[in-house]
Length: 448
Image (tube, rainbow, N blue to C red; front, side, top):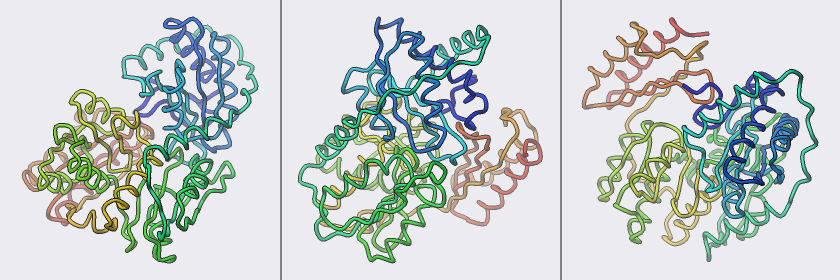
């Protein structure tokens, strides 16, 4: 089991292990050493979101990288997928993003990308972890942080050109669009990007102060942009998370449109144009059974991967699928992106709407979802649930009761100390009964 890396990099409370200065410096040293094994003069691209802790973490990490023999280019505040794209486009040995994505401002994280723009595979992360441990064992004094290198503003401009090139001919004329930037990394890109597309664009939550990222806004609170769509009689609402690697939407009626619905409309569009390889989409264990049914009606198969867009991507690469994603809004378009990209997803959804002449509500109208509930339980440790008799019994009882009419998915969050209980069923009463029973058992055994 990995000690430092979760499903999306290293994450924790800023200033506390594993994001204390000593460990962050060791991460930089370990990454530099792994890169030096491949290339003599590794170049690393660094980006970050808008948390107040990003500057200090970036400086400490840079000191470790430079001490280890790497050079660092600083893209400043920029989205995670922008770093992934630019890393690959310019031949960097690695890309690093200082971000905790959808987490609150007190948290932060370190995400790593390889020279191909993909997140590192588990085996590479394990090797880096071993080197981090060796570096920590040899540290005898607190590291001295270096100044982060000057920001290269050209990186953002290039990323915007890449995004616009993906949707030639797209125009928002006669459309009113609400865009919620979550006071995060999208704030540095989205206002200019959408203004270049015409129409009327209402930008909200694009005034980061270091502590308001994801606070009552963004993809964690899609109902906020949905309400704004209704208030302004807009055509569509778009909302991002803190590092803009995912996007959710609201249709013209104010209904929230999640990643499952985006996968459906994108899959049908690609399938109609002969661009959906093997007529297959990769989703996750959290995607609703209603998506599988709707795709099936269009002759499209659905595969399920573990939660985490890196695992979706791994299955896409293994099967040759050209589209995959998560209910939470991470969508990957093979050949266009190497990771979930909220801004790219938003433009491609707008392009489908533009070319089809249909509204978002019309494009997703036949997605009939099973009732689904997700209960999050804060835990003090992440013991294997199957080893806890009361929890295992509650899960077994739910699976037996819902066999053929629902699904039970229980997992630990890869980024927070949470157990997630997801149950989906035709019968809402049964669904809530079993979700509460399992959550209660976890709370009794592991809860804070």
